[in-house]
Length: 167
Image (cartoon, rainbow, N blue to C red):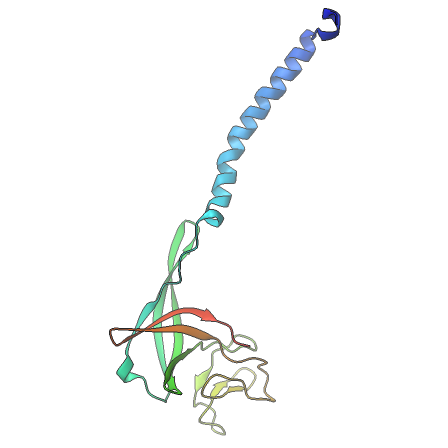
């Protein structure tokens, strides 16, 4: 092959050089942004942490008790504290912790506030009802039971973990 086939004009040389330099600069600017956007997703997920609710195992009865506690949440680089509640009771010789959030539309359920059914959880928004164990009463708006917290007992104290959805 002759040199004529491989000659690059001054204009082509400048085009290739500026394109290469521009691409290198763009990659240099985009790499940190991509890393920042993907970093939280690349972090290994840890086990759910259990939080003490300040209630001892001996204080838990068959009557549901409302407990309020705080959970520390990590959202990317921001850490915040969120208040949560649970209804804690002893059911079939086990400790059960129910979420107070109605599975119908997210209102807060309370124990024993319905005069017609004092032994049930009641949602005042749309008259949803739940049994003592959190199962929904047939014929009421909620279509599934109350969610439950993971429960752990350490040194006689109750610790709650993440919320799990039931059937």
